[in-house]
Length: 582
Image (cartoon, rainbow, N blue to C red; front, side):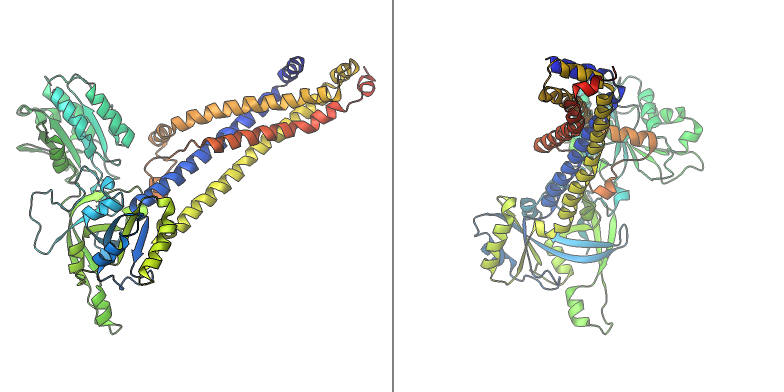
Protein backbone atom coordinates (compact mmCIF):
# COMPACT_ATOMS: atom_id res chain seq x y z
CA UNK A 1 0.00 0.00 0.00
CA UNK A 2 2.87 2.35 0.76
CA UNK A 3 4.31 1.79 -2.71
CA UNK A 4 0.91 2.53 -4.26
CA UNK A 5 0.63 5.69 -2.16
CA UNK A 6 4.04 6.89 -3.33
CA UNK A 7 3.22 6.10 -6.95
CA UNK A 8 -0.05 8.07 -6.79
CA UNK A 9 1.63 10.95 -4.94
CA UNK A 10 4.36 11.25 -7.55
CA UNK A 11 1.87 11.15 -10.43
CA UNK A 12 -0.36 13.78 -8.78
CA UNK A 13 2.48 16.26 -8.92
CA UNK A 14 2.86 15.98 -12.74
CA UNK A 15 0.24 17.41 -15.09
CA UNK A 16 1.99 15.70 -17.99
CA UNK A 17 0.99 12.34 -16.48
CA UNK A 18 -2.62 13.28 -17.19
CA UNK A 19 -1.71 13.96 -20.82
CA UNK A 20 -0.01 10.57 -21.03
CA UNK A 21 -3.18 8.97 -19.71
CA UNK A 22 -5.24 10.83 -22.34
CA UNK A 23 -2.84 9.60 -25.01
CA UNK A 24 -3.38 6.01 -23.90
CA UNK A 25 -7.16 6.56 -23.75
CA UNK A 26 -7.27 8.05 -27.23
CA UNK A 27 -5.18 5.21 -28.62
CA UNK A 28 -7.41 2.54 -27.07
CA UNK A 29 -10.59 4.36 -28.10
CA UNK A 30 -9.43 4.73 -31.70
CA UNK A 31 -8.27 1.14 -31.96
CA UNK A 32 -11.48 -0.30 -30.52
CA UNK A 33 -13.81 1.92 -32.57
CA UNK A 34 -11.98 1.33 -35.86
CA UNK A 35 -11.50 -2.43 -35.37
CA UNK A 36 -15.15 -2.76 -34.33
CA UNK A 37 -16.32 -0.90 -37.44
CA UNK A 38 -14.00 -2.91 -39.68
CA UNK A 39 -15.13 -6.12 -37.98
CA UNK A 40 -18.78 -5.20 -38.45
CA UNK A 41 -18.08 -4.20 -42.04
CA UNK A 42 -16.41 -7.56 -42.75
CA UNK A 43 -19.22 -9.46 -40.98
CA UNK A 44 -22.03 -7.64 -42.81
CA UNK A 45 -20.18 -7.83 -46.10
CA UNK A 46 -19.82 -11.59 -45.80
CA UNK A 47 -23.47 -11.92 -44.70
CA UNK A 48 -24.76 -9.89 -47.64
CA UNK A 49 -22.54 -11.72 -50.09
CA UNK A 50 -23.92 -15.01 -48.75
CA UNK A 51 -27.44 -13.56 -48.92
CA UNK A 52 -27.22 -12.77 -52.65
CA UNK A 53 -24.62 -15.35 -53.67
CA UNK A 54 -25.36 -19.04 -53.37
CA UNK A 55 -23.12 -21.12 -51.11
CA UNK A 56 -22.08 -23.21 -54.10
CA UNK A 57 -22.74 -22.57 -57.79
CA UNK A 58 -22.59 -24.98 -60.71
CA UNK A 59 -21.99 -23.11 -63.97
CA UNK A 60 -21.92 -24.34 -67.52
CA UNK A 61 -18.53 -22.65 -67.96
CA UNK A 62 -16.70 -19.91 -66.10
CA UNK A 63 -15.22 -18.79 -69.41
CA UNK A 64 -18.31 -18.61 -71.63
CA UNK A 65 -21.89 -17.50 -71.05
CA UNK A 66 -23.01 -19.10 -74.30
CA UNK A 67 -22.28 -22.59 -72.94
CA UNK A 68 -25.55 -23.67 -71.33
CA UNK A 69 -26.83 -26.50 -69.15
CA UNK A 70 -29.48 -28.14 -71.34
CA UNK A 71 -31.13 -30.65 -69.01
CA UNK A 72 -30.88 -28.64 -65.81
CA UNK A 73 -33.64 -30.46 -63.92
CA UNK A 74 -31.80 -33.77 -64.30
CA UNK A 75 -28.53 -32.17 -63.13
CA UNK A 76 -30.33 -30.54 -60.18
CA UNK A 77 -31.80 -33.90 -59.15
CA UNK A 78 -28.31 -35.38 -59.25
CA UNK A 79 -26.94 -32.54 -57.10
CA UNK A 80 -29.71 -32.97 -54.50
CA UNK A 81 -28.38 -36.45 -53.74
CA UNK A 82 -25.49 -34.87 -51.80
CA UNK A 83 -26.38 -35.03 -48.08
CA UNK A 84 -25.30 -31.42 -47.42
CA UNK A 85 -27.39 -29.90 -50.23
CA UNK A 86 -30.59 -28.20 -49.00
CA UNK A 87 -31.92 -26.56 -52.18
CA UNK A 88 -31.06 -25.97 -55.84
CA UNK A 89 -32.32 -23.09 -58.00
CA UNK A 90 -31.70 -22.44 -61.73
CA UNK A 91 -30.67 -19.13 -63.28
CA UNK A 92 -30.20 -17.93 -66.83
CA UNK A 93 -27.91 -14.91 -66.68
CA UNK A 94 -27.33 -12.69 -69.71
CA UNK A 95 -25.86 -9.16 -70.21
CA UNK A 96 -28.13 -6.39 -71.48
CA UNK A 97 -27.99 -2.65 -72.15
CA UNK A 98 -30.72 -0.51 -70.55
CA UNK A 99 -32.26 2.69 -71.86
CA UNK A 100 -32.43 4.19 -68.33
CA UNK A 101 -30.18 4.23 -65.29
CA UNK A 102 -26.76 2.53 -65.50
CA UNK A 103 -26.43 1.29 -69.07
CA UNK A 104 -24.79 -2.06 -68.42
CA UNK A 105 -26.89 -4.59 -66.50
CA UNK A 106 -27.40 -8.30 -66.09
CA UNK A 107 -30.76 -9.88 -66.88
CA UNK A 108 -31.27 -12.95 -64.68
CA UNK A 109 -34.08 -15.40 -65.21
CA UNK A 110 -35.21 -17.06 -61.99
CA UNK A 111 -37.94 -19.24 -60.55
CA UNK A 112 -38.96 -17.17 -57.47
CA UNK A 113 -40.13 -20.17 -55.43
CA UNK A 114 -36.76 -21.90 -55.88
CA UNK A 115 -34.67 -18.73 -55.62
CA UNK A 116 -36.11 -17.96 -52.19
CA UNK A 117 -34.76 -21.30 -50.95
CA UNK A 118 -31.13 -20.62 -51.88
CA UNK A 119 -30.67 -16.88 -51.20
CA UNK A 120 -32.01 -13.87 -49.33
CA UNK A 121 -33.92 -12.77 -52.43
CA UNK A 122 -37.28 -12.50 -50.64
CA UNK A 123 -35.88 -10.38 -47.76
CA UNK A 124 -34.46 -7.76 -50.14
CA UNK A 125 -37.74 -6.86 -51.89
CA UNK A 126 -38.74 -3.26 -51.09
CA UNK A 127 -42.02 -1.66 -50.10
CA UNK A 128 -43.73 -4.85 -48.96
CA UNK A 129 -44.13 -6.25 -52.47
CA UNK A 130 -44.43 -10.03 -52.77
CA UNK A 131 -41.16 -11.69 -53.90
CA UNK A 132 -42.52 -12.74 -57.29
CA UNK A 133 -43.55 -11.20 -60.59
CA UNK A 134 -47.19 -10.50 -59.77
CA UNK A 135 -48.45 -7.28 -61.29
CA UNK A 136 -49.72 -4.88 -58.59
CA UNK A 137 -50.61 -2.03 -60.94
CA UNK A 138 -54.03 -3.48 -61.72
CA UNK A 139 -53.32 -3.01 -65.43
CA UNK A 140 -52.58 -5.80 -67.88
CA UNK A 141 -49.07 -5.73 -69.29
CA UNK A 142 -48.83 -4.95 -73.01
CA UNK A 143 -48.41 -7.97 -75.25
CA UNK A 144 -44.80 -9.10 -75.41
CA UNK A 145 -43.72 -7.22 -72.28
CA UNK A 146 -41.87 -8.99 -69.48
CA UNK A 147 -42.34 -8.23 -65.74
CA UNK A 148 -39.03 -7.53 -63.98
CA UNK A 149 -37.71 -6.83 -60.49
CA UNK A 150 -35.01 -4.17 -60.50
CA UNK A 151 -32.02 -3.57 -58.29
CA UNK A 152 -32.64 -0.34 -56.39
CA UNK A 153 -29.64 1.32 -58.02
CA UNK A 154 -30.82 0.68 -61.59
CA UNK A 155 -33.73 3.11 -61.31
CA UNK A 156 -32.86 4.76 -58.02
CA UNK A 157 -34.58 7.98 -59.04
CA UNK A 158 -37.94 6.21 -59.05
CA UNK A 159 -37.54 4.94 -55.49
CA UNK A 160 -37.05 8.00 -53.32
CA UNK A 161 -40.18 9.74 -52.14
CA UNK A 162 -41.56 11.91 -49.35
CA UNK A 163 -44.42 10.38 -47.39
CA UNK A 164 -46.45 11.93 -44.57
CA UNK A 165 -48.94 9.74 -42.71
CA UNK A 166 -51.85 11.63 -41.15
CA UNK A 167 -53.69 9.31 -38.74
CA UNK A 168 -57.30 9.96 -37.76
CA UNK A 169 -58.26 7.80 -34.78
CA UNK A 170 -56.81 4.83 -32.89
CA UNK A 171 -57.52 2.37 -35.69
CA UNK A 172 -55.58 4.60 -38.11
CA UNK A 173 -52.59 4.74 -35.74
CA UNK A 174 -52.55 0.94 -35.46
CA UNK A 175 -52.84 0.56 -39.23
CA UNK A 176 -50.02 3.04 -39.82
CA UNK A 177 -47.79 1.21 -37.31
CA UNK A 178 -48.24 -2.00 -39.27
CA UNK A 179 -47.98 -0.28 -42.66
CA UNK A 180 -44.71 1.60 -42.13
CA UNK A 181 -42.96 -1.27 -43.88
CA UNK A 182 -43.76 0.51 -47.15
CA UNK A 183 -41.11 3.10 -46.21
CA UNK A 184 -37.68 2.19 -47.49
CA UNK A 185 -34.34 3.51 -46.11
CA UNK A 186 -34.00 6.22 -48.75
CA UNK A 187 -37.51 7.63 -48.31
CA UNK A 188 -38.22 10.62 -46.11
CA UNK A 189 -41.29 10.29 -43.92
CA UNK A 190 -43.16 11.73 -40.96
CA UNK A 191 -46.18 10.58 -38.96
CA UNK A 192 -48.82 13.01 -37.66
CA UNK A 193 -51.80 12.18 -35.43
CA UNK A 194 -54.72 14.26 -34.21
CA UNK A 195 -52.70 15.96 -31.49
CA UNK A 196 -49.00 15.22 -32.03
CA UNK A 197 -46.33 14.27 -34.53
CA UNK A 198 -43.37 11.91 -34.36
CA UNK A 199 -40.87 14.33 -35.86
CA UNK A 200 -40.64 18.03 -36.56
CA UNK A 201 -39.30 17.46 -40.06
CA UNK A 202 -39.04 14.88 -42.80
CA UNK A 203 -36.14 12.51 -42.20
CA UNK A 204 -34.75 9.53 -44.06
CA UNK A 205 -36.37 6.28 -43.01
CA UNK A 206 -33.49 4.24 -41.62
CA UNK A 207 -34.61 0.83 -40.38
CA UNK A 208 -34.19 1.87 -36.74
CA UNK A 209 -36.23 5.02 -37.25
CA UNK A 210 -39.05 3.15 -38.98
CA UNK A 211 -39.21 0.77 -36.01
CA UNK A 212 -39.15 3.69 -33.54
CA UNK A 213 -41.98 5.44 -35.39
CA UNK A 214 -44.04 2.24 -35.36
CA UNK A 215 -43.51 1.87 -31.59
CA UNK A 216 -44.41 5.53 -31.11
CA UNK A 217 -47.66 5.05 -33.05
CA UNK A 218 -48.65 2.01 -30.98
CA UNK A 219 -48.32 4.14 -27.85
CA UNK A 220 -50.63 6.89 -29.12
CA UNK A 221 -54.22 7.16 -27.90
CA UNK A 222 -55.21 8.15 -31.39
CA UNK A 223 -57.89 10.80 -31.03
CA UNK A 224 -60.02 11.89 -33.95
CA UNK A 225 -58.96 14.94 -35.96
CA UNK A 226 -61.18 17.94 -35.20
CA UNK A 227 -59.41 20.72 -37.10
CA UNK A 228 -58.70 19.13 -40.49
CA UNK A 229 -57.22 22.22 -42.19
CA UNK A 230 -54.79 22.72 -39.28
CA UNK A 231 -53.57 19.09 -39.37
CA UNK A 232 -53.36 19.09 -43.15
CA UNK A 233 -51.43 22.37 -43.03
CA UNK A 234 -48.80 20.73 -40.77
CA UNK A 235 -48.32 18.01 -43.39
CA UNK A 236 -48.14 20.43 -46.32
CA UNK A 237 -45.73 22.66 -44.39
CA UNK A 238 -43.34 19.71 -44.11
CA UNK A 239 -43.57 18.85 -47.79
CA UNK A 240 -43.29 22.35 -49.27
CA UNK A 241 -39.53 22.61 -49.73
CA UNK A 242 -37.23 23.31 -52.65
CA UNK A 243 -36.35 20.11 -54.54
CA UNK A 244 -34.07 21.71 -57.11
CA UNK A 245 -31.25 19.25 -56.43
CA UNK A 246 -33.41 16.11 -56.35
CA UNK A 247 -36.84 15.29 -57.67
CA UNK A 248 -38.84 13.34 -55.11
CA UNK A 249 -42.53 12.49 -55.54
CA UNK A 250 -44.52 13.51 -52.48
CA UNK A 251 -47.50 11.67 -51.03
CA UNK A 252 -49.81 12.54 -48.15
CA UNK A 253 -51.53 9.42 -46.86
CA UNK A 254 -54.63 10.23 -44.82
CA UNK A 255 -55.59 7.16 -42.81
CA UNK A 256 -59.22 7.73 -41.87
CA UNK A 257 -62.55 5.90 -41.80
CA UNK A 258 -64.32 9.22 -42.45
CA UNK A 259 -64.51 11.44 -45.48
CA UNK A 260 -61.98 14.26 -45.64
CA UNK A 261 -64.05 17.45 -45.24
CA UNK A 262 -64.71 19.25 -48.49
CA UNK A 263 -62.20 22.01 -49.30
CA UNK A 264 -60.08 21.09 -46.24
CA UNK A 265 -57.04 20.36 -48.45
CA UNK A 266 -57.39 23.56 -50.46
CA UNK A 267 -57.85 25.62 -47.29
CA UNK A 268 -54.72 24.10 -45.75
CA UNK A 269 -52.78 24.67 -48.98
CA UNK A 270 -53.80 28.32 -49.15
CA UNK A 271 -52.41 28.87 -45.65
CA UNK A 272 -48.92 28.35 -47.06
CA UNK A 273 -46.98 31.39 -48.20
CA UNK A 274 -47.30 31.96 -51.97
CA UNK A 275 -43.64 31.15 -52.70
CA UNK A 276 -44.02 27.86 -50.84
CA UNK A 277 -47.26 26.98 -52.58
CA UNK A 278 -45.35 27.18 -55.86
CA UNK A 279 -43.04 24.43 -54.55
CA UNK A 280 -45.92 22.05 -53.84
CA UNK A 281 -48.67 21.66 -56.42
CA UNK A 282 -51.36 19.53 -54.81
CA UNK A 283 -53.46 16.88 -56.47
CA UNK A 284 -56.31 16.21 -54.03
CA UNK A 285 -59.40 14.08 -54.54
CA UNK A 286 -61.38 15.94 -57.17
CA UNK A 287 -59.19 19.05 -57.26
CA UNK A 288 -55.79 20.22 -58.44
CA UNK A 289 -54.13 23.23 -56.79
CA UNK A 290 -51.21 24.89 -58.52
CA UNK A 291 -49.64 28.33 -58.48
CA UNK A 292 -48.82 29.89 -61.88
CA UNK A 293 -45.22 29.09 -62.84
CA UNK A 294 -44.89 26.21 -60.38
CA UNK A 295 -42.78 23.15 -61.17
CA UNK A 296 -45.08 20.53 -62.73
CA UNK A 297 -42.66 17.72 -61.84
CA UNK A 298 -43.04 18.26 -58.11
CA UNK A 299 -46.56 17.55 -56.94
CA UNK A 300 -48.30 16.13 -53.92
CA UNK A 301 -50.93 13.44 -54.20
CA UNK A 302 -53.40 13.19 -51.32
CA UNK A 303 -54.33 9.54 -50.75
CA UNK A 304 -57.25 8.71 -48.44
CA UNK A 305 -56.81 5.13 -47.14
CA UNK A 306 -59.38 3.41 -44.96
CA UNK A 307 -57.81 1.49 -42.03
CA UNK A 308 -58.58 -2.20 -41.93
CA UNK A 309 -57.17 -5.71 -42.40
CA UNK A 310 -55.85 -4.94 -45.92
CA UNK A 311 -54.39 -1.53 -45.12
CA UNK A 312 -50.81 -2.63 -45.70
CA UNK A 313 -51.58 -3.97 -49.18
CA UNK A 314 -53.38 -0.75 -50.13
CA UNK A 315 -50.41 1.26 -48.85
CA UNK A 316 -48.08 -0.89 -50.94
CA UNK A 317 -50.22 -0.35 -54.02
CA UNK A 318 -50.58 3.41 -53.56
CA UNK A 319 -47.28 4.47 -51.99
CA UNK A 320 -44.73 2.03 -53.29
CA UNK A 321 -45.34 2.78 -56.95
CA UNK A 322 -42.71 5.44 -57.52
CA UNK A 323 -41.11 2.91 -59.85
CA UNK A 324 -43.73 0.17 -60.30
CA UNK A 325 -45.25 0.22 -63.77
CA UNK A 326 -42.30 2.03 -65.32
CA UNK A 327 -41.47 0.73 -68.79
CA UNK A 328 -37.87 -0.19 -69.46
CA UNK A 329 -36.22 -1.27 -72.69
CA UNK A 330 -33.22 -3.59 -72.73
CA UNK A 331 -31.07 -4.41 -75.76
CA UNK A 332 -28.99 -7.55 -76.09
CA UNK A 333 -27.48 -10.04 -78.51
CA UNK A 334 -28.78 -13.56 -78.03
CA UNK A 335 -26.56 -16.66 -78.01
CA UNK A 336 -28.05 -17.70 -81.34
CA UNK A 337 -27.16 -14.30 -82.83
CA UNK A 338 -23.57 -14.81 -81.76
CA UNK A 339 -23.41 -18.30 -83.24
CA UNK A 340 -25.18 -17.45 -86.50
CA UNK A 341 -23.83 -13.96 -87.11
CA UNK A 342 -20.16 -14.53 -86.43
CA UNK A 343 -17.98 -11.57 -87.37
CA UNK A 344 -19.58 -10.66 -90.68
CA UNK A 345 -21.63 -7.83 -89.17
CA UNK A 346 -25.02 -9.51 -89.67
CA UNK A 347 -25.86 -9.60 -85.95
CA UNK A 348 -29.04 -7.70 -85.11
CA UNK A 349 -29.61 -6.73 -81.47
CA UNK A 350 -32.77 -7.94 -79.75
CA UNK A 351 -34.91 -5.35 -77.92
CA UNK A 352 -36.68 -6.51 -74.77
CA UNK A 353 -39.66 -4.55 -73.42
CA UNK A 354 -40.09 -4.84 -69.66
CA UNK A 355 -42.40 -3.45 -66.97
CA UNK A 356 -41.16 -2.94 -63.42
CA UNK A 357 -43.27 -4.75 -60.80
CA UNK A 358 -40.95 -4.43 -57.79
CA UNK A 359 -37.44 -3.48 -56.71
CA UNK A 360 -34.93 -5.01 -54.33
CA UNK A 361 -32.21 -3.54 -52.17
CA UNK A 362 -29.48 -5.98 -51.12
CA UNK A 363 -27.38 -3.22 -49.53
CA UNK A 364 -24.55 -3.92 -51.98
CA UNK A 365 -24.23 -1.63 -54.97
CA UNK A 366 -22.53 -4.34 -57.02
CA UNK A 367 -25.88 -6.13 -57.14
CA UNK A 368 -28.31 -3.23 -56.77
CA UNK A 369 -26.91 -1.31 -59.76
CA UNK A 370 -26.63 -4.22 -62.17
CA UNK A 371 -29.21 -6.93 -61.62
CA UNK A 372 -32.62 -7.15 -63.29
CA UNK A 373 -34.65 -10.25 -62.36
CA UNK A 374 -37.22 -11.73 -64.76
CA UNK A 375 -39.16 -15.02 -64.93
CA UNK A 376 -36.91 -17.84 -66.12
CA UNK A 377 -39.24 -18.98 -68.87
CA UNK A 378 -39.51 -15.42 -70.22
CA UNK A 379 -35.72 -15.03 -70.40
CA UNK A 380 -35.36 -18.45 -72.03
CA UNK A 381 -37.94 -17.42 -74.63
CA UNK A 382 -36.26 -14.06 -75.26
CA UNK A 383 -32.89 -15.72 -75.79
CA UNK A 384 -34.34 -18.59 -77.84
CA UNK A 385 -32.90 -21.08 -75.34
CA UNK A 386 -35.99 -22.89 -74.11
CA UNK A 387 -35.35 -25.20 -71.14
CA UNK A 388 -31.71 -24.12 -70.74
CA UNK A 389 -29.85 -22.31 -67.93
CA UNK A 390 -26.23 -21.40 -67.30
CA UNK A 391 -26.16 -21.52 -63.48
CA UNK A 392 -27.45 -23.79 -60.75
CA UNK A 393 -27.31 -22.11 -57.35
CA UNK A 394 -27.01 -24.39 -54.35
CA UNK A 395 -27.72 -23.86 -50.67
CA UNK A 396 -26.00 -26.21 -48.21
CA UNK A 397 -26.49 -26.89 -44.52
CA UNK A 398 -23.27 -25.19 -43.37
CA UNK A 399 -21.80 -22.51 -45.61
CA UNK A 400 -18.43 -22.88 -43.87
CA UNK A 401 -18.20 -26.34 -45.47
CA UNK A 402 -18.80 -25.04 -48.99
CA UNK A 403 -15.33 -26.08 -50.17
CA UNK A 404 -15.88 -29.68 -49.06
CA UNK A 405 -19.28 -29.79 -50.73
CA UNK A 406 -17.88 -28.25 -53.92
CA UNK A 407 -15.16 -30.91 -54.08
CA UNK A 408 -17.75 -33.68 -53.79
CA UNK A 409 -19.91 -32.10 -56.49
CA UNK A 410 -16.92 -31.83 -58.85
CA UNK A 411 -16.37 -35.56 -58.50
CA UNK A 412 -20.08 -36.27 -58.85
CA UNK A 413 -20.41 -34.20 -62.05
CA UNK A 414 -17.17 -35.65 -63.46
CA UNK A 415 -15.94 -32.38 -64.95
CA UNK A 416 -19.02 -31.73 -67.07
CA UNK A 417 -19.56 -28.36 -65.39
CA UNK A 418 -17.54 -25.91 -63.29
CA UNK A 419 -18.24 -25.67 -59.55
CA UNK A 420 -17.43 -22.52 -57.52
CA UNK A 421 -18.04 -21.40 -53.94
CA UNK A 422 -19.18 -18.03 -52.64
CA UNK A 423 -15.67 -17.44 -51.22
CA UNK A 424 -14.12 -18.04 -54.64
CA UNK A 425 -16.56 -15.70 -56.40
CA UNK A 426 -15.79 -12.85 -53.98
CA UNK A 427 -12.24 -13.83 -53.02
CA UNK A 428 -10.65 -10.50 -53.99
CA UNK A 429 -13.23 -8.45 -52.08
CA UNK A 430 -12.98 -10.60 -48.95
CA UNK A 431 -9.17 -10.55 -49.02
CA UNK A 432 -9.16 -6.76 -49.52
CA UNK A 433 -11.38 -6.27 -46.45
CA UNK A 434 -9.19 -8.58 -44.33
CA UNK A 435 -5.96 -6.88 -45.43
CA UNK A 436 -7.41 -3.41 -44.87
CA UNK A 437 -8.57 -4.40 -41.40
CA UNK A 438 -5.11 -5.70 -40.44
CA UNK A 439 -3.22 -2.74 -41.87
CA UNK A 440 -5.58 -0.28 -40.18
CA UNK A 441 -5.02 -1.94 -36.79
CA UNK A 442 -1.23 -1.88 -37.25
CA UNK A 443 -1.20 1.78 -38.24
CA UNK A 444 -3.47 2.85 -35.39
CA UNK A 445 -1.39 0.91 -32.86
CA UNK A 446 1.30 3.55 -33.39
CA UNK A 447 -0.96 5.90 -31.40
CA UNK A 448 -0.51 3.58 -28.43
CA UNK A 449 3.26 3.49 -29.03
CA UNK A 450 3.35 7.29 -29.02
CA UNK A 451 1.48 7.26 -25.73
CA UNK A 452 4.11 4.81 -24.46
CA UNK A 453 6.87 7.24 -25.38
CA UNK A 454 4.98 9.94 -23.47
CA UNK A 455 4.98 7.66 -20.41
CA UNK A 456 8.70 7.06 -20.88
CA UNK A 457 9.38 10.80 -21.05
CA UNK A 458 7.08 11.54 -18.11
CA UNK A 459 8.65 9.00 -15.79
CA UNK A 460 12.18 9.91 -16.87
CA UNK A 461 11.52 13.53 -15.86
CA UNK A 462 9.90 12.30 -12.65
CA UNK A 463 12.96 10.23 -11.74
CA UNK A 464 15.20 13.27 -12.33
CA UNK A 465 12.97 15.49 -10.16
CA UNK A 466 12.61 12.89 -7.40
CA UNK A 467 16.27 11.94 -7.16
CA UNK A 468 16.45 13.25 -3.55
CA UNK A 469 13.31 11.34 -2.50
CA UNK A 470 14.62 8.16 -4.10
CA UNK A 471 17.94 8.58 -2.27
CA UNK A 472 16.14 8.99 1.06
CA UNK A 473 13.97 5.89 0.72
CA UNK A 474 16.97 3.90 -0.52
CA UNK A 475 19.00 5.10 2.49
CA UNK A 476 16.13 3.99 4.74
CA UNK A 477 16.42 0.45 3.41
CA UNK A 478 14.24 0.32 0.32
CA UNK A 479 15.39 -2.46 -1.98
CA UNK A 480 16.13 -2.21 -5.69
CA UNK A 481 13.01 -4.26 -6.39
CA UNK A 482 10.91 -2.00 -4.16
CA UNK A 483 11.92 1.19 -5.99
CA UNK A 484 11.56 -0.57 -9.33
CA UNK A 485 7.99 -1.64 -8.46
CA UNK A 486 7.00 1.93 -7.46
CA UNK A 487 7.79 3.35 -10.88
CA UNK A 488 6.46 0.32 -12.77
CA UNK A 489 3.28 0.79 -10.77
CA UNK A 490 3.11 4.38 -11.96
CA UNK A 491 3.24 3.22 -15.58
CA UNK A 492 0.58 0.62 -14.84
CA UNK A 493 -1.69 3.20 -13.17
CA UNK A 494 -1.43 5.49 -16.21
CA UNK A 495 -2.19 2.51 -18.43
CA UNK A 496 -5.16 1.25 -16.41
CA UNK A 497 -6.76 4.70 -16.13
CA UNK A 498 -6.16 5.40 -19.83
CA UNK A 499 -7.47 2.02 -20.92
CA UNK A 500 -10.57 2.40 -18.72
CA UNK A 501 -11.30 5.86 -20.09
CA UNK A 502 -10.74 4.64 -23.66
CA UNK A 503 -13.04 1.65 -23.17
CA UNK A 504 -15.86 3.80 -21.79
CA UNK A 505 -15.46 6.31 -24.61
CA UNK A 506 -15.38 3.57 -27.26
CA UNK A 507 -18.55 1.93 -25.95
CA UNK A 508 -20.38 5.28 -25.89
CA UNK A 509 -19.29 6.09 -29.45
CA UNK A 510 -20.17 2.65 -30.82
CA UNK A 511 -23.61 2.73 -29.17
CA UNK A 512 -24.37 6.11 -30.76
CA UNK A 513 -22.34 5.84 -33.97
CA UNK A 514 -25.16 5.97 -36.51
CA UNK A 515 -27.10 8.78 -34.75
CA UNK A 516 -23.81 10.68 -34.56
CA UNK A 517 -23.20 10.16 -38.29
CA UNK A 518 -26.76 11.30 -39.04
CA UNK A 519 -26.24 14.41 -36.89
CA UNK A 520 -23.00 15.23 -38.76
CA UNK A 521 -24.84 14.80 -42.07
CA UNK A 522 -27.70 17.01 -40.89
CA UNK A 523 -25.35 19.79 -39.80
CA UNK A 524 -22.72 19.64 -42.56
CA UNK A 525 -24.21 17.70 -45.46
CA UNK A 526 -21.26 15.30 -45.29
CA UNK A 527 -21.83 11.65 -44.42
CA UNK A 528 -18.78 9.93 -42.85
CA UNK A 529 -19.73 6.50 -44.24
CA UNK A 530 -20.91 6.95 -47.86
CA UNK A 531 -23.41 4.24 -48.72
CA UNK A 532 -22.58 4.21 -52.42
CA UNK A 533 -18.92 3.45 -51.66
CA UNK A 534 -19.16 0.99 -48.79
CA UNK A 535 -22.30 -0.78 -50.07
CA UNK A 536 -23.98 -0.82 -46.64
CA UNK A 537 -26.95 1.26 -45.48
CA UNK A 538 -25.67 1.92 -41.95
CA UNK A 539 -22.32 1.93 -40.21
CA UNK A 540 -21.84 -1.63 -38.93
CA UNK A 541 -20.09 -2.47 -35.66
CA UNK A 542 -18.99 -5.68 -33.99
CA UNK A 543 -18.11 -6.07 -30.30
CA UNK A 544 -15.35 -8.65 -30.66
CA UNK A 545 -14.32 -9.33 -27.04
CA UNK A 546 -11.10 -11.27 -27.89
CA UNK A 547 -9.93 -8.40 -30.10
CA UNK A 548 -10.77 -5.87 -27.40
CA UNK A 549 -8.90 -7.98 -24.84
CA UNK A 550 -5.87 -8.09 -27.16
CA UNK A 551 -5.96 -4.29 -27.51
CA UNK A 552 -6.22 -3.80 -23.74
CA UNK A 553 -3.48 -6.32 -22.99
CA UNK A 554 -1.05 -4.97 -25.59
CA UNK A 555 -1.68 -1.39 -24.42
CA UNK A 556 -0.97 -2.27 -20.79
CA UNK A 557 2.16 -4.12 -21.91
CA UNK A 558 3.36 -1.04 -23.79
CA UNK A 559 2.70 1.13 -20.72
CA UNK A 560 4.68 -1.20 -18.42
CA UNK A 561 7.55 -1.59 -20.91
CA UNK A 562 7.67 2.20 -21.37
CA UNK A 563 7.95 2.61 -17.58
CA UNK A 564 10.74 0.02 -17.30
CA UNK A 565 13.77 2.16 -18.36
CA UNK A 566 13.09 5.07 -15.93
CA UNK A 567 12.08 2.58 -13.19
CA UNK A 568 15.36 0.71 -13.67
CA UNK A 569 17.27 3.99 -13.58
CA UNK A 570 15.55 4.96 -10.30
CA UNK A 571 16.14 1.55 -8.73
CA UNK A 572 19.88 1.65 -9.58
CA UNK A 573 20.45 5.10 -8.03
CA UNK A 574 23.21 5.13 -5.40
CA UNK A 575 21.82 6.75 -2.20
CA UNK A 576 25.14 8.52 -1.56
CA UNK A 577 25.21 9.99 -5.07
CA UNK A 578 21.55 10.93 -4.82
CA UNK A 579 22.03 12.87 -1.55
CA UNK A 580 25.54 14.26 -2.14
CA UNK A 581 24.40 17.79 -2.96
CA UNK A 582 21.43 17.93 -0.53
